[in-house]
Image (tube, rainbow, N blue to C red; front, side):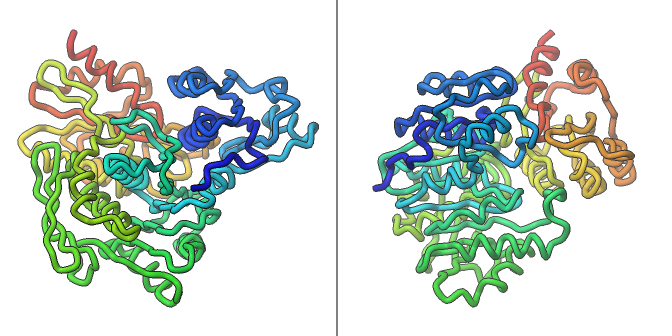
Length: 464
């Protein structure tokens, strides 16, 4: 197994080290013995976790944070060109490495599984990490979210398997050359980087084309974008294609998904035999993620029945339908969903898990560009809830776009028959929700921004 530290990574400095993707790479390097340093905008549990591994973490961005003997500076696409540490790296002639190149170097020499798709990457990668760990294979993994079980988003393992979430948003997943690639779905998103579905397909084709000779593509048989991609890559002679889903033609066919409260029982038909296992999160969307994980593990030669049993040990990822607590008979659940397809899947999953409960959603749109392109579809998704509260747009890395506000979503939601309340002051949400909620209701905080912080505040307000 290759787990040595690349020379350029011996003393890396991460700008934005607290980010989900960046922190994972930093953790693995620290566990391999590198002298890791970096900076982030604010203190966080992630910063403390990195310090516990021996990393130096500065708060705030300043030129002096970059040590003179740093061997490289690691950045993500979110780092702006005027960052002072980036300027200092240029002065010192320190190489600048993109996050994806750093991750690719960590996978070198290992049996890599790269999990791609517009939605579901974090969950599927996590399912594989948990299952392979449960089987004693001690994998390395880098995930875009924290596992409920091990409580981390990354780990250096002594085994020969590396499971990685492969991000298409900035085309960085094209840097990887996995033994197994998973494509869960292909849809138009990340509108600042992709102008059309043709650009999306081209990007995914490049990713699939990097699979090692003799390797396997595990791809959805039901999702239209994935079906189109399958047709486009069928002629790659060195690639084995394994489809999964409910289609009669799927190689790994989802025979039945049976809701069991906040879990599901999944039965698949694989190589002529039925196999049943439990998934600890509700809904068909997550059941299909688990089947993709199963198919990928089988592609590496792991017995299907062992994998199925181990997948049952998966207990979830933070922010993926994560139960935050209950107060006065009201359950509060957190969802990372921010694209209409994800929103619909999570809302339908909650409907199926608690069909007799009212569903109240607190939704925070993520990015001006996404809202501009998909605001109508977001509003239509909210029609699946009984009541919705919509916050202002969380900008993340983007500057405001004139005329693009949450009103685009609210107007579409009302046109679709949804009952929606606009709340511009996030601190007012707990009071608003407390005024709406009744015993037996489910409250779902939804979005990729800081809406997740509202769960505990809503619970506290309900308790009082």
